[in-house]
Image 1 (spheres, rainbow, N blue to C red):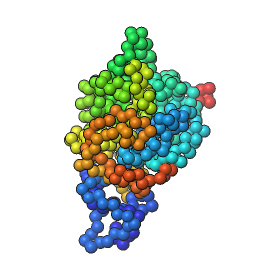
Image 2 (image 1 turned 45 degrees about the horizontal axis):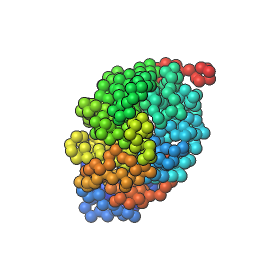
Image 3 (image 1 turned 120 degrees about the horizontal axis):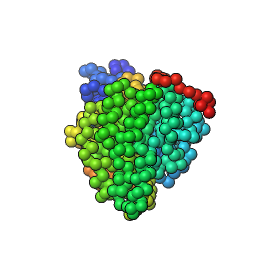
Image 4 (image 1 turned 90 degrees about the vertical axis):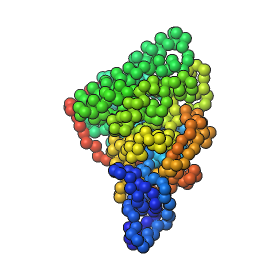
Length: 472
């Protein structure tokens, strides 16, 4: 570092990325990490700004690979300004937004329109998924060329995709063939739509309106079967798939076995599936309603073990805001599905680090490094290396707070975590070297966020894909 001048130096912190934590200063120039190390005795390092991180930890910014920022279409719930602001306060420096907006991200035209909206409003970097559905499958290759970060498909019905529909198995298989040839990963909402439809109809006929009815309408087998089907199709085609928001232990076992066979399948879980259960749904009602539903607490031990071992690749949030009117009804079927998460996930998980449930390095792997690798943003994102984007978060593991939904930065003020005490907070969030949040104060400007795209893919088709023109 000697003899050089930098834009910013983070001094005195403990760096936690890949490998063992170590103490070092981090120098930043032009939005990237320029140097990492400790100054020699008497060495003077010049920088326009010096940030003291003594007694704290410096980690890569979290990459939340599963958010619903609702814009375009439902901006009364959330928009890019509010959602990305919440992300920054939560130590999230990159978000990947799902395609089930209005209109959905199902064509190049709709992708570019959403991208322009996000570029105007986002405080953090972002990527956008393209939709894989019966009506949008023919657009996969064009959306891939246009720069979507990945794709998303729905095997099960949810209130958030009623305007999209459930993909047919035939289309799913053919889409996986095309995706395998492109080397593009596809997120799968893995629930069996037919089982859900039948169970829901039976519960309605029986007059069930209680919160437990939601869980009963989507039993574990819905996830287990859909995960198995997705794996079979991926193994046959060579497609790269990512199972979203998984909270079922038996599904994790299926995924682990598939990985051992060489299937390119990854999986995320969310704080709600690690820390809440169907008991919270029964007690909390609509505030706790999400898809897939909160599961029996007997799943927790296996999920935590898989997170520590790396069998669960990533932590995401499925951040899905709704208005208070949409979350509070005595009739559970009238309550919209979805929880806030992008601002609270890091404090919740750091609390478990403080309790010894996982290490800080294990958390960083699941929250930053693995998502960057899965979506081919690494090593630009998800790590602390010379040349990487300076997406950095300073964490104070000793700081405590009580989650107050009224103080969250999302438009929605209905949080399943309201009143929960957390220990371990992000105190400074930097996106490409720019301080966006520091000590509870918003410092950044909307429009700072950039759209991220993948590095060149490595296609892995196992069967010759048909073109959609030929199939038509």
